[in-house]
Length: 369
Ligand SMILES: Cc1cc2nc3c(=O)[nH]c(=O)nc-3n(C[C@H](O)[C@H](O)[C@H](O)COP(=O)(O)O)c2cc1C
Image (cartoon, helix red, strand yellow):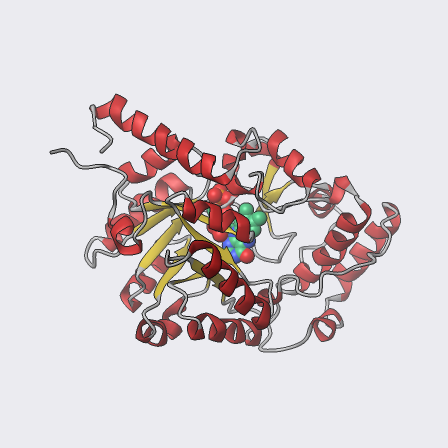
C-alpha cells in the first residue's frame, strides 16, 4: 500500500492530521487551525506572564485535549534587564534624532495609546525567562524558540513532557540545536516574514534535513510557504511539516488591523523588505515609509536591538493610533503573493492540503490516503 505523503512523523508525534503548523499571535486563528487538523504555535513574546497564563487557559478551553505550542524568543544581544522607559532613555542619540526629524517632516503626531505589552520579550534577557516559567508550569505541549538556542531549557522542559523546537536560519545553528537535543528544528529561509537569515528556503531546508538525518530529528520547513504547492515542495525536500506565518494574517479570524490586511492582500513579494530598520536585526516586513526613510542616503545605520525596536514602536503606535497608512507595516514573507482573499483559517488548511495531495497525485500517481 502507498504511504500518505502528508502523514509524517510530526503527525504521529503531535497527534495531528496534517503537518501544517501555524505561527500566529491570534488565539482564534490558532484554535481554528488546530480544530481543522493542523497545529498552531501561539506567539507570546509580547505578553507579560499573567496574560500568557490566561491565553494558555483560553487555548485549552477551545482545543480540549489537542496539543498546541507557545513561541518565545531568547535574544542574546539585548541588555540583561531594564524596563521600557529605562531602555528608551538609552536609545543612541543619532538614531533618536533622525526619528525626531522624521516625525517633524511627516507631521507624525504622538500616539495616544502605546500598547503597554508590546514586544516585551525583545527588550531584555530577564523578561523571556519569566515568560518561560509560565510555559513550563502550564506544561504547554510544545515550546518553540523563535530566536536563540533553547538548549538551556531542554532538561526542564523534557521533565515536564514538553517538546522543544528551535528555529534556525543557518546550518551551524541547526547542528548545534540538534546536538543539544531539540525535538524538532524549524529550518527557515530568507523568504520568511520576521527575523530571518540570508539563505533561501529551498537551500536551507535540504541542508538541515541532511544534518538531522543522523538523529532522526524532524525538520519543519519555514519561509514563504503559503500554498499546497509549497507544502508538497517542503515534504519533497525532506521536511516533516511546514511552519507558516504570513498566510494566516489576512484570514477571517485574524485580529490584524483591516488596513494592514488590505495591504497584505494587495502585496507582491517585492513589496516586502529584509532590513534591520524595524528591530535592529534583519527582519522581513511590508515596505513602508519607515523603510524608505532608513534606506535614504542621509539615514544612519539602524540602532541595535532593542533600541531600534523602541524607535519603530513609537512610530508604529502613532501610525496605528492615527491611521497613518504610509507608516503601517507588518511582518510578511515573500509568499504573500499568493495571499489573495480573506479566507477562514480552516479553509486555508484544507486548501493547502488538497492542493498538496493533488500535486503528489499528478506527479507520482500518489493516492491520498
Ligand atoms: C506578523 C508576524 C509576526 C511574527 N512575530 C514573530 C515572533 O514574535 N516570534 C517569532 O519567533 N516569529 C515571529 N514571526 C515569524 C514566524 O514565526 C515565522 O517564522 C514566519 O512567519 C514564517 O515565514 P512565512 O511568514 O513566510 O510563512 C512572525 C511572523 C509574522 C507574519
